[in-house]
Amino acid sequence: MKENIQNTVLMVMDMQEGILANFASADALLKNVSKAIAHARENKIPVIYVVVGFRNGAPEISKNNKGFATAKQRFAGADTTAFMKVHNDIASAENEIIIIKRRVSAFTGSDLEVVLRA
Image (cartoon, rainbow, N blue to C red; front, side, top):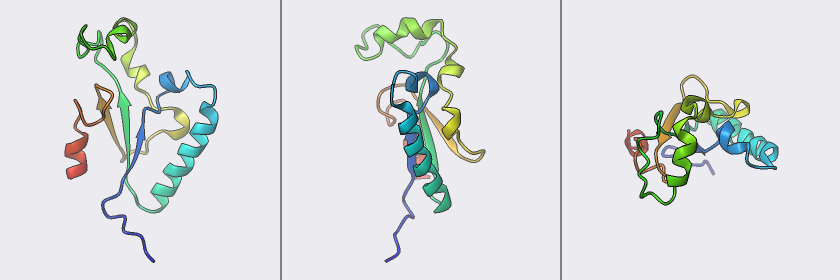
């Protein structure tokens, strides 16, 4: 039985060096994600990367946002471009899309829905 993959994508989310550095088992996770990416590419399934990130100074984070407010100070002086960089072991290919999300959900404050509908 042939699988219907017409409306299928692989979303690689939050696989940033700055995030993975917080996990002791990041190597095992990276190996598994790498296998999933290879499988998707071999089967012509689009791979979409989603990273969490903010502009310099994190103007997107309100002091009333309980989830991110404490992180705003860390982001205020951080190199946001470096923080949003996907780990080298699973980096995107030239033609793959990278979505920047500004909240926990990739559907809020990003253009993911527009890309998926296209």
